[in-house]
Image (cartoon, helix red, strand yellow):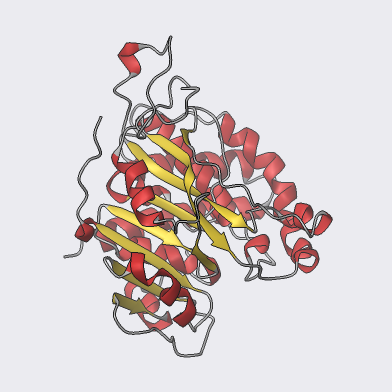
Length: 348
């Protein structure tokens, strides 16, 4: 199947401005980003003015914009890395791509700079194959196909709703692993994409991700926040929770999720040992979260992503809320997010 033609104006690149000076970040990405519209969300906890070089088509949003648009809602917060979700909320485009501001273009095994945007769009605009695993990876990539024994009835695939890219240099490890192995670096560029099988859970990394907003936009949501959550990736688990939510939605709705290419090169930021003190609560809670999502089944009445999120939230409150109040707060935030999504995205 050939690549679906995607126009540049069908894509928004959302950038969570955790650091106010985006000059070096955007200059490194200029050749790739300058074709597209950027939505830049300033971390509302920062007081410094954003520094953005010229030559880009972008809109910026600050704490004042967040307060103006979400009104009196306080169940959903957009501080730290969560500010990216405000960009998801405002976008009207079919495809949304988000790359953290501590990441730069990677190079492939031949030394060529990776066009992460094109690779994400390639993943999203070609079918996924979640219901039978193809051992030759993504059969819709150039030079690949379905292997012998793959059912012909499943070869048309399904819509790909989520594309999860990877990181060179500093991989998306948790604080315990990075603290134990401080010198560990990911130097392997593996030229492969695969579909995550149906009913298999996975952690999502918001560092380098893209999705079809029309299919699963409401399922990428800010909700699960640790009491002592910090500003570094090791100190957050919100995107991991989001990944399991959106995977349940994809499985229920019959969509696919791809992982692998594209890579970005991620620089070091933060102290793993100090971050461990903040993330450890989340590490422990994941032991309760994963079995919950693995057993999650939604009703036939849930036929939109919004419906799915509301059903998941109800189950979270009922089954996990008694374990820790953080789950009750997450459930409330999920319901509030759906209300916000319906209100904001229907405005012209």
